[in-house]
Image 1 (tube, helix red, strand yellow):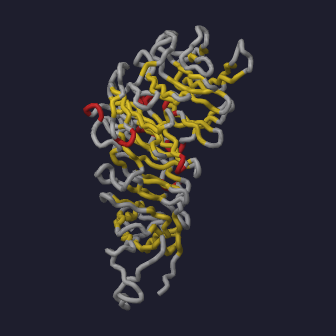
Image 2 (cartoon, one colour):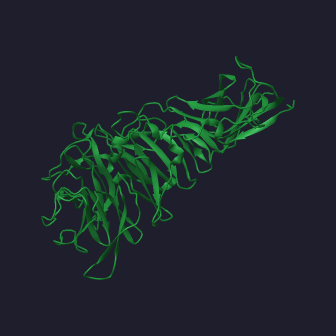
Image 3 (cartoon, helix red, strand yellow):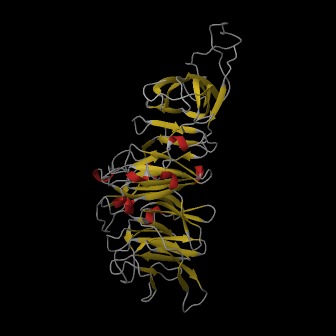
Length: 504
């Protein structure tokens, strides 16, 4: 029998999460809070995928993984790892020690920056005297021939067929360049001085971006053999964390500063992109450790993952916030892990932990056997305005037909006692309690087996209040959910005076 009711639609949530606003100021397309959930390309919210070990046994007795990556060397795709004081070839998940005679100083903060320079891997960390090189195959790692021009470079880039190294032991404001086509030849005067400590290098269009906290400087080719590169300061703000610099489509560069995440599009200004993370998220970021934060662009989903230290006194990167370049919104955080390095391997995000393992993210529905606590909260919407009391009836939710799982749906509002209902998401597999129309269906008894990719389910709502919001959650191991949108049914009561005490 039809119900005389109004409907408030929440979602799809294309605006992502906004930690800078109260729930009452967030619209139907936004989220107030979330954890371990993803906003998909259509604005659906889903529990994030899990992670699993890439290598079967811990590297170097469980040492911290300070670098990893995948690249093609000598015509063969290779995966490398630096764990503690060892360099490994871990292609295919099997580790082979390729350290050779190079010196690697173990330490959680001795993180590496690396590039593919022609047909050679080169990595530096600002701690060990010479950069590491590796040609792949059965070769051991070697040391970079820098003609004794500098020691302990921190930042690295390969651009214009040259190797570039910055912030070296004697001059933290200097960037050196090799000869063109020869990463082992360094002229005595082939360097650029910037006056500020260099915090990162990143090729950007036809220039090399040199980041200092005081600004982004560019080096551009001149075509003049006497002065081959022009040096110019473009902006007044640059990164404090070189591993956080990410180039994304649309000629944009993202990077981290103390107060948030910024974008540079090549002009003389930078733009803060992370206003939505202010207050309830960024206020808990440990800015004293932001210099060790890092980021990773995930092309398959058009996302940038920022690994950040979240929580008072937190030294490790234990939180990931994600920027969707397609939707221009934020979601996350992802948590339940700490990481020290990251790279794309087989087109998926992988990250190094503090126990000798590479973790394959976007894998399975649990965190290496542990459950994922996924939840999200909608905005607190007043469909008829704050002056109109509403009687809340039920919510009809559209979700993906993925599994025989339950999602807790909690209703919250200022004048309503929080109530939790269960949304049962049953699937079409052989274990589901469905019947086939032509064989096992019984009228008034059976539930017809659906063949659709999405289903709907109802959960009861309660109470009287101009506003209400919903929290969806699932904390069960190896279970997932994808919520497309929900419609809240209500009856407008009219303009009434609120009681000063009690529950209506």
